[in-house]
Length: 263
Image 1 (tube, one colour):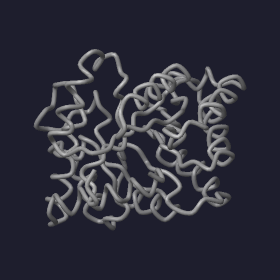
Image 2 (cartoon, rainbow, N blue to C red):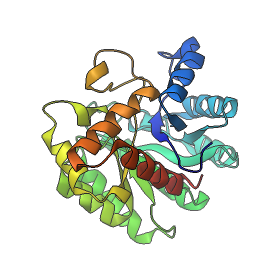
Image 3 (tube, rainbow, N blue to C red):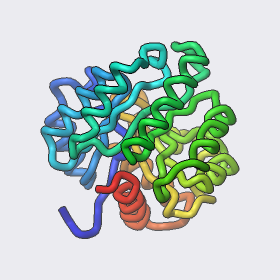
Image 4 (cartoon, rainbow, N blue to C red):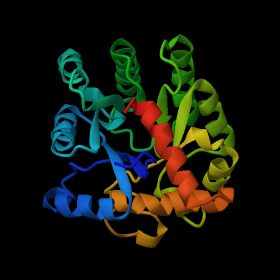
């Protein structure tokens, strides 16, 4: 890989069934688009194992371990023990995605809080950053993370707010806690002015980019399956609103991600 990093898709689901047997072609298109590194995200015990299996296939892919708030009701000591074991793998770079989702409420709120705080404690134990999911729970999630960040021993960045969906004020408050802010395809949607304002107002060393593929395709590919090659559209949108070149945004966001995940 080059000394100056290319695009880094910090949040993908390469092991999702929607990609399936197309993975080799998806990965080839990512390379052609200048995507040099990808993190594929675990959302349950089985999903985390699948993420790690994909990461083992590709030198430039890493994995996370986590139980998503949708599956928080399934969190238990056995999963925690297995995550502790899997975290010894050199391709595991974070705990996540974890957090709160009060939009779909597929797990009771009490279970979401319990799984969230337990996995934050696990990240402390393993000295790993966290990948945070927050939907329709902005202040609730911020409250949990502000208390955790105050006790966190790891130097910043301590984690990333995945697919950020708040406003500029919230983005800056999270950055003050030690988090990076990740922008995905929605920053390219015509009506998402608040997201573009957040991307414009943050310092560039606070920003990373992602696809969340195969979901949330950017505007030029909306309605189609998303894939890592499309992260360039997000970087281009951020560059446009900031008045900077896409190469500068791609390079700095990649450096930010390298520091976050200790790659």
